[in-house]
Image (cartoon, rainbow, N blue to C red):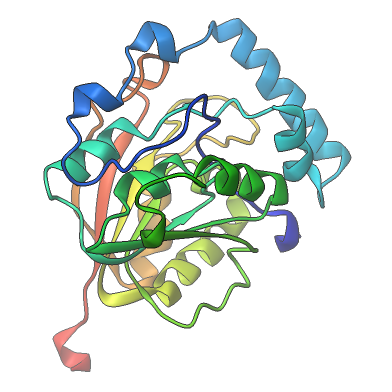
Length: 258
């Protein structure tokens, strides 16, 4: 089962990405909502078709979705609030990981000389897109893309930051505890996990599967994580506004174990 677990990634781009971090003005990077969003009924049809593809082929389904352009999670740009955190120097430096990176906007957005970013995706088509789109990026020395299964991947070095947006909601709910254990395994003891908790609603089925703050707490608390901040994401794109929160998490080590 795990071999098909992927990501609800980001990013089908229309232009060559530039180096966004850390000084690019936010207004120059984020497109206005009317240019960003599509009609909800059209997007719903794409989600339905995506689910049919995944049901018909649980092994290669995600790759087929990328091949057919069935990527309704795709913003076509970096995640606005992530760009804001980067431009305001509110992200940890060091090594960063974006699971379910898709075509790589978020990876390129936060990469800079002080932060090396790794984007992973189980879809070969997604990774090929990311590599093509980033081929002329001026900050290409500061990121890389890997086609791999997040759940079985064993990198040589740990990470100071992990950013998860549309990955948690894409995996089957009974694998969320496995996700949490892998996050703990990949993150340095003093590292930070940043999650955009989405979609917060009452729909049935998935992907994307509905989520809540308590869903994250249920799997992160047992492996030692606590939220240091959970707030509304006021920079969410219009269709997702009011349906997502920004969560920041750190590991807390009991003094009795020190």
